[in-house]
Length: 264
Image (cartoon, rainbow, N blue to C red; front, side, top):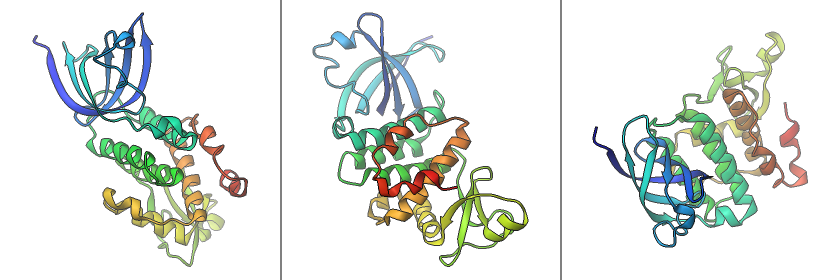
């Protein structure tokens, strides 16, 4: 069988040393999704891979694979963007770490997903610039849950159909992935994490807005923290495990936002 050669763009989500001089990379590619590749001699390279194979680097890569069951060989890599601020600014690093962890936990090798690729690129691009790091994380998680098949239902109570509006306070159920109104909380023994009507309206708008326009949103602090709270807890439920990097992200919060951690 002749080897398959693939040229595509991709973002490095993981690197680990292998042998004396090699690197094994996890690259989220435009074509093919999550891909594992070995870069032979990368740790001793003075020319071919120098300063290119860093975490979060955005590359154009050439991958050679002998058969579908073998690990790909990284033959060439050209740097599009290094996203240096993601590695040098602690707040942006912790935000990128959360995005990276969610992506690695929720995706599998070889499953093409152009929407998640575009979302990753959008998130790292805006983290590398001036967009607030917590806002990037929140918007990423909102869209990412949708893309992996767990879109939060934010239009009405999942139990009785009571529509959401700015005058009402709802809860969000991580078990059902949707809103629960106060009436159903009290009469049907349902529970949920508190979510104001204004936060629900903001999330509804962000769910369907074109990706390229998300940076235009101006999100009040209280709405941002309410949204982060439910999206983190929902993701933890969907994935069935804690998000390790969330502890680092939490350390970037101001003391006055502690309610984010204790809301139920």
